[in-house]
Image 1 (cartoon, rainbow, N blue to C red):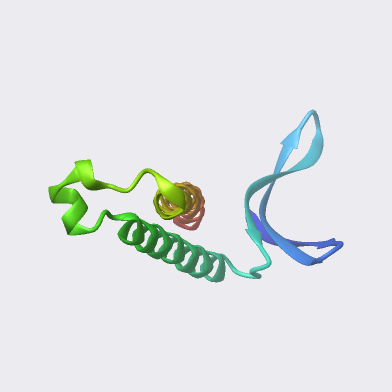
Image 2 (cartoon, one colour):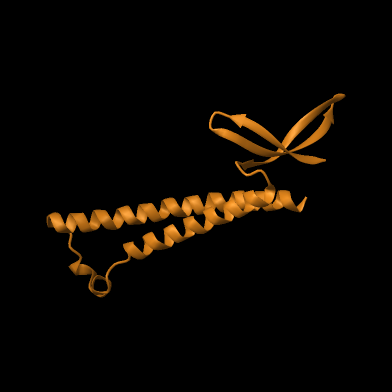
Length: 123
């Protein structure tokens, strides 16, 4: 039977979904999933859904900012590459693409954790 266990840490209380099992005549505990600072499984799922939506919005926003202006899409040979303004523009473009990749990675991690939490709730 599974239950929620509270663990005291340096920065607060953390919760885990735990089950008991018997091994070699002794009772052991197995952590099914970590809930973070959420005392219930439902609260952990809701929080993870919010994180996932936030990361997806961040990725979309960064990719929109990194999009080339229409003029440069039509005339890629005219993209400024020389001079301080050209370098700044290119650096800003690549920085936004890197930031979008960072958000995409975070969204993937949150989606994986959300899948784990939903699997725990199905049990």
